Image 1 (cartoon, rainbow, N blue to C red):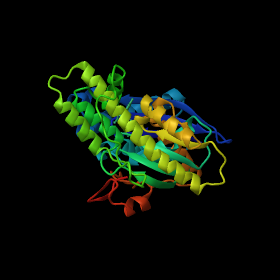
Image 2 (image 1 turned 120 degrees about the horizontal axis):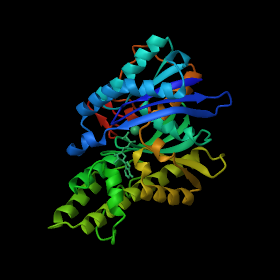
Image 3 (image 1 turned 180 degrees about the vertical axis):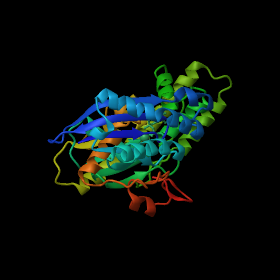
Image 4 (image 1 turned 90 degrees about the vertical axis):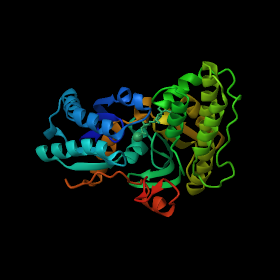
Length: 364
Ligand code: KG4
Ligand code: ZN
């Protein structure tokens, strides 16, 4: 089965062609991604209108380009898959509408993919990874711990009660004037730290028994340190960046540790080492990876992280989710709607209004 995947839910426009062979092996025939960092950098964050316009301008050519690279015509495809949410609605529309056009023109099925499901399945692009596994999804929009038992079978153990981990990086970087996107900037500055312990930052939710996350207090504490510096030097920047990075890494690892114990209890008959998958842009951070690796070993788990290009937003993961759904006969009509909010685990999101919920219902 061969599927074209399209992605445009945040600030990366991406297209990929993926083939699933009879033995279940997946092969990425072609892929392309165009970022928009320079367009958003002056604003220190993603501007939805700028993102939507850039996606709309580029999506067609990108889709055409990967099909050409793969040597295929739209009618050679078994389906076209697009992120249909959650995300910035103007952006999501670009991939979804393009996919609908291709589906209609070539008379092939459409698969409307949940972006988070794409991230959740992304390690299966490069690893032979069986279900179930524990997933830590850490991106600019999401921070959650999820048990992945199969396509469409995800149980959320915890989620952020305020900011996402990537937002904590991005907002702190903005306060400190490190540049955008903040995560990679913080990581770069942190490399020059002489004394990462100089700025004390709290371990969030240290005594909380859930698997939830919180970053707002960390962000405020970092800003207080920053404001207390009269004329901050590059060394101050480096030391505070390192303190923030390690505080985020410690918090992620501590919460993942709790989830690993729950996973072990639920799947007591599985033989170790058990899989902990780290996906999403923040999983690109070396300090975060190291903290998770150490924590995983301590709990009898092995940390698995997709290669960096599949950790951040990409279309191969959307094509994979599409091909898996197509194999299960789960396709969508051309009336499939773009959804700014679309929780992976609807039940958990509905029961836990503190977790990323708003007036219009749970976000994710
Ligand atoms: O998964 P992603 O590409 O997009 C979504 O949010 O869906 O994640 C982007 C986030 C941004 O907040 C960015 O600052 C963060 O991932 N990020 C990093 C690093 N690379 C990207 N955070 C920390 N260290 C990094 N090296
Ligand atoms: Zn993402």
